[in-house]
Image 1 (cartoon, helix red, strand yellow):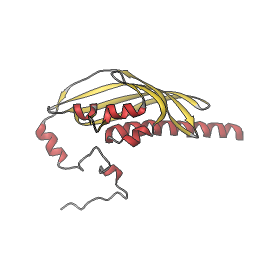
Image 2: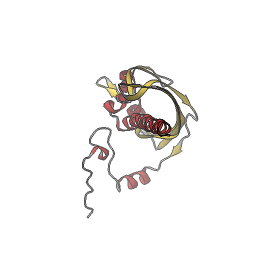
Image 3: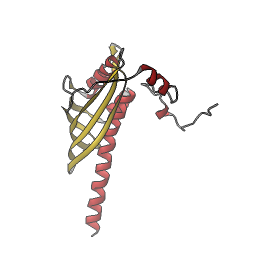
Image 4: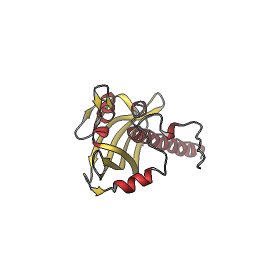
Length: 184
């Protein structure tokens, strides 16, 4: 009985750590946090993102940019969010294969339009030195773009009511301890 409980507990912990790894990557893309994205990958990993295929360091430059210029997210969007939905993982020792559905919403730069992309992250993750990270990723595209209009006035009115998002560590999500300013 004890061995059965231990095995189930190990599986639950592994599943949780795998999902947290994938969440770090998505959050890193949305915050343009190179360290957070890189923390989700083994250094020798390969990411095939359709129009891009390369190492984690190259992927960070592709999405976030570098001193040479902005990455694809900043080139195309004024803001974007990656949502992870359905997730499954087959775990075999220190290797796991997972499939995670995503939805990405982005507001186009210089436009009152936004788009929605859906697809799946198909990953091979490996536990090395006790930590689960992505070893290989292939992105499978679903619906490529469903455009809709964003009323600039409505967006500006809504944005005035909320904390201003940033693509760096000044974003409110990094604030420790979180403080809520008094509203006058």
